[in-house]
Image 1 (cartoon, helix red, strand yellow):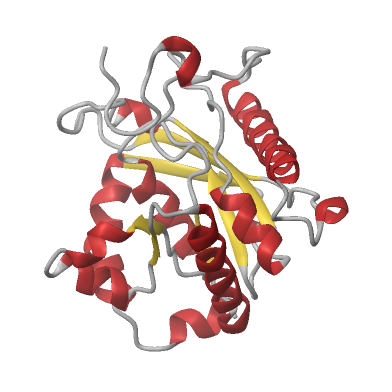
Image 2 (cartoon, one colour):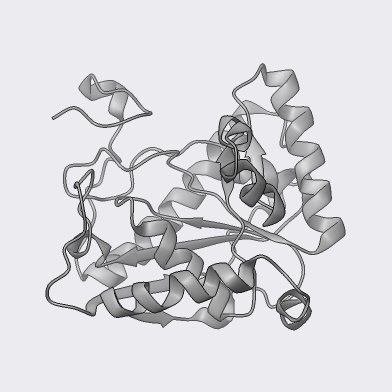
Length: 249
């Protein structure tokens, strides 16, 4: 569906024309194994997240493969005038904080829509910018794996590195000089969840699937950084940190 996704009139066209030129001026992006992102059909793409500039890099690289970059976004954003209209028109997927039963029903509907329309969605499994002081992936949440398991959808890990030179974690403003800072992106093989199929309602299964995903993302980032991640993944709760919102230094 890659070619047909972009061949139809879409609000992505003017957005891409506005966004891609300045991002390309700020970042010289190299993508490794871009062919591993499915060219057609549904997928859940799960990148690491440590800079508020990350989504622009990820969106641009997904768009360049021929797929449309749709993100999971907080439901409250869809109620903001203009922004909500843009999010709806570009096919972004709302996610609400709700009871487990309501969340499960919402996930089923979202995964069915992805499969029926052959769409992909980008989900940050950490849920926010990593709290790890060295910017390694921290403990993940189950949103991405819930979607993948509910619809038997390929779960694709992704890692990127270099964006912090453009905009550090919670940095105010962008570092403009020098232009075209080096950013590398790598796409991994789908996470194998075949032995967990049909068991997405079990908490132990969600925990196992999430750990497999975060391990895959971390391995990709190790490849980009040329160093090993800490043996123990950062857990905000163990360090007295909130898992959402800005990080207080």
